[in-house]
Image 1: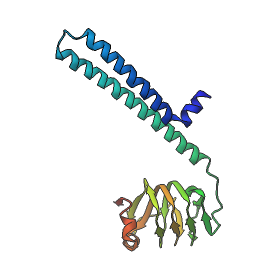
Image 2 (image 1 turned 30 degrees about the horizontal axis):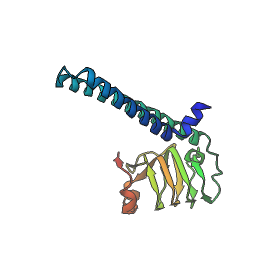
Image 3 (image 1 turned 90 degrees about the vertical axis):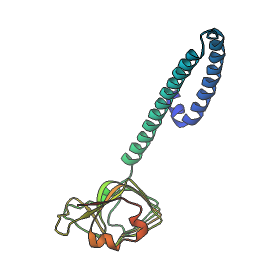
Image 4 (image 1 turned 30 degrees about the vertical axis):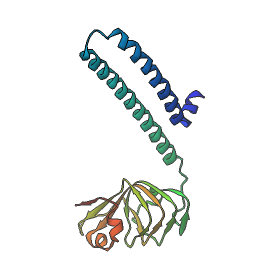
Length: 195
């Protein structure tokens, strides 16, 4: 129960620990200055360095804990995303794993509409005729293929429309001609890799 409370309110816990840590540090510093008064500035420099290293270690620990909490939230969100029916035409306010659209025979799903959705990879997506309006791309890339390159194991959506969506961990696979047709604002949001 205590760990759950800390997990839910970790910013408040960090603030309280920081307050008590700073007041304790100030008291120790006042006491240490009385004891080290006769040893000169080299000791003050060494003590400052030690406290700096302690601070860096505490900050590193905080960042590790925060990273683990965010990673756990992402895993929970990804694992518990409900499966969707890929035959539905329009999706609104849903969390969608793109692997639900993977078809073993490279089947294209035509004219799908995604509004205010969160689309999660990892996935390779071939989407000729894509329309993207006000979307957020996180860890997404464009992989430009040669014209003769095979395309297997790819989620295929023809003429999809993404509006106000969050797309994460997706590699968009396309030919150079398809990449040239993308709007400039979409090209600028994702790094391009050419094979």
